[in-house]
Amino acid sequence: EVQLSDSGGGLVQPGGSLRLSCAASGFTFSSYAMSWVRQAPGKGLEWVSAISGSGGSTYYADSVKGRFTISRDKSKNTLYLQMNSLRGEDTAVYYCAKDRERTVTTLFDSWGQGTLVTVSS
Amino acid sequence: DIQMTQSPSSLSASVGDRVTISCRASQSISSYLNWYHVKPGKAPKLLIYAASSLQSGVPSRFSGSGSGTDFTLTISSLQPEDFATYYCQQSYNTPPTFGPGTKLEIK
Image 1 (cartoon, rainbow over the protein chains, first blue to last red):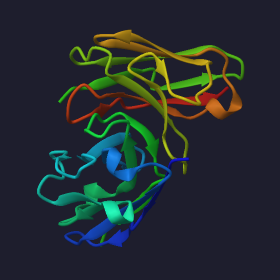
Image 2: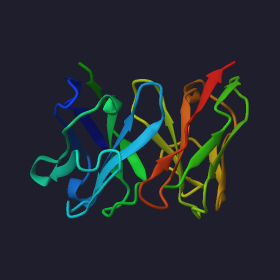
Image 3: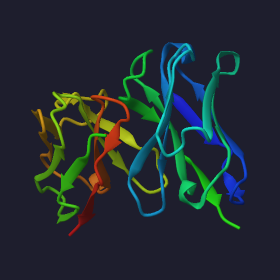
């Protein structure tokens, strides 16, 4: 059974940094692309970033480009999102999501339960 | 970016009802349209992919149709566990975009 466990969220001040993690199990981690998707309070879903199964290709939403970095560690079966220069509008529940393919197709067949990031002074 | 719209934004229905949710893309996305539902505090769940393909393990009361710019999700007979918010999403190009959601509530 595919399991994705998001962690690393918390309260951070504007301009601060945070690193999210997503521990994966139940599938061959390096065979699938992965993404981060967020949901701000009372809002809909917004894709944030994606990485191919090999880690060689990465993609970002314009709203986070230059501030967030997605990465993956094959040895730990873990996906990461390094978030720098955080803003109030980054406040959201962040979900990791598994792609159906090794390349980034953004068809998400499994999701984590989410981790809440709150950016506030 | 491709804009996705949904209607209605909210819907009240009873157990056993048949409900339909519509989704429209701002340009043709062929059949690269997926449907998810989200419940508070739970992981989002993929229901339908490629406009009409039922994801493994999803009950057959869920079905999808459409191509190009107009798509529909139908639940043939609502069950208590179906009350949630439903999102369509295009995977035609990057960035993938989601509709604003349809909140399905118990009447």
